[in-house]
Amino acid sequence: MNRAALATAFALLIICACRAEPAYRVDKSISHGDNEDSIFFIDDDNYIFDGGCRLYNLQKKKFSKDCDLPTDPRWATPSPSGKKIFVTSIGPASETFESYIYDTASRGIVFRLHKAIFAAPIAVHPNEKMLAMMKGKDPDVPDSGQVVLTDLEGNALSSPVDTGAVINLLFSDDGSGLSIIREDGTATFCTVASHRLGPCQDDALPSPFISPNSQYVVNSDGKAVSLRDRTGLELFKLPMDTTKETGRYVSYSRDGRRLAIKGLLPQENGKIAPGFVAITFEKPVFGLSSSTTAYKAD
Image 1 (cartoon, rainbow, N blue to C red):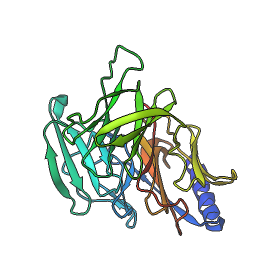
Image 2: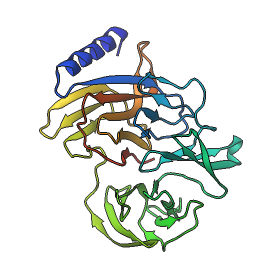
Image 3: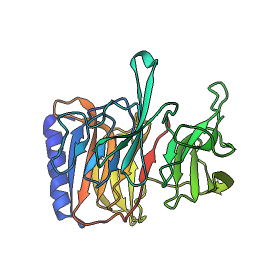
């Protein structure tokens, strides 16, 4: 897409945004970290984490000048409240690692871990003291893998559940259940009680692309992303390539007003670069949620 066409597309988008109900604005930015796959809102929903050590301020529409996190993450997972980030950084030549829990309010480390590696797929329980993670994946055995509940250091708290290859784990808002989404597109729902995982049963595949109130859904064809309401009406469409995204690349804010999507964005010079768009509505339209994110397999 050339410079003139790109400018026209975004001009039309702004015009449509002003006329559409509900009204919204679109902000876009180039990413400052490409070692991590995640994008998510933190604490008051005015900041976005998109992989680097600096946070994006939605009000100022820019990244922090200096690093907010003490290290560049390799993996990062938010707590359901968005008040903490569980981070693992990898040292030079992948010989060392550092894991810690970062508090978004104080902007500092509140807990360092010595054995844990927060590699995706992983989910943080609402009590922030328990994790669900995948273990036992054999690279030589297709569709192998187990899911287990662990403490923060990765010590098993439950017996493992055979699941096959998993791409996403998601605790229910009250922490009483765990949705396990597999690479083959199927899903299992397991109860969680007293450090027990199970019983489990096949479940309808959760769709994190759908807003918390089930009124809107994000669609992606690889070349563009769009948001439609339940009637099929398209609210917006943006040029963005999401085919290379391998982690959490769509996220709804907890206040029901914002949506962030990560991918490759066309630039005015005709090139593409990793970045994200943040869509902010004047009023809450998505419904309230403790954590709503979408994943894509590696």
